[in-house]
Length: 126
Length: 163
Image (cartoon, rainbow over all chains, first blue to last red; front, top):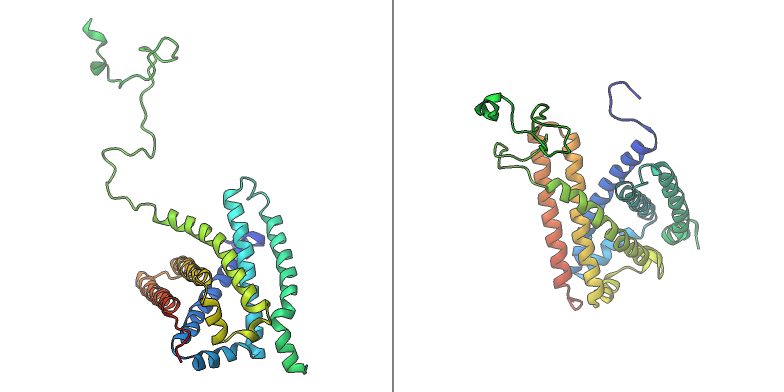
């Protein structure tokens, strides 16, 4: 770490960085997502046309990334709440971060088939 | 005896003048005002507790959003064939129920306010010039109000027989 900075590195800082980055990404997606859903007020055809792009293999990969961002932000958010409100939270913040990472890895593995299965079948044949 | 008059002695009021106190007339402890005590000299206009309520809102809405958003992801991307099933008919089927309308409305409002407050913090942290901060936050609030109103309108005025 360079001298003269408040950034301390390690689990505390990097989880904070990841929380920010995922939060901003999710917010921008949310904005787009409300706009695309608003098309149900225009016509069923226009809505279905735009939703069809969500079913393409490349966007499926982006959806997997979105799930990754949301799951990390949700799990780490619960960790932040524990650090703030649980008296022993600050003492166990590292252990809680690695628990978050562990649960995240398991859930991301579980999301592989449901989120990417259809894209896999489309690219590599049924 | 007028010589023991406190006003004349140059020492302020004495704390704890009871018989069990270590202090007495001969060993006075002057009253010291607490460092952040509100007095008549304190300015009336303080900033209020907005940032504290913002901090609390992030945690409370966060807990609710974990349930709402993860439930939403499970329904939209995992169950019944994942994203492949989504279309106008699917939306019409779900919004026929007030339960899912209320779910989506709560999710919209909480997520937009949670995200907007988060981005406000990010802007405050990284935009160093006052005018840059004002413009970015103006843009943020405009986009937030627009998105919340649009989404609310769509949920309340949804018409399954639009065509």
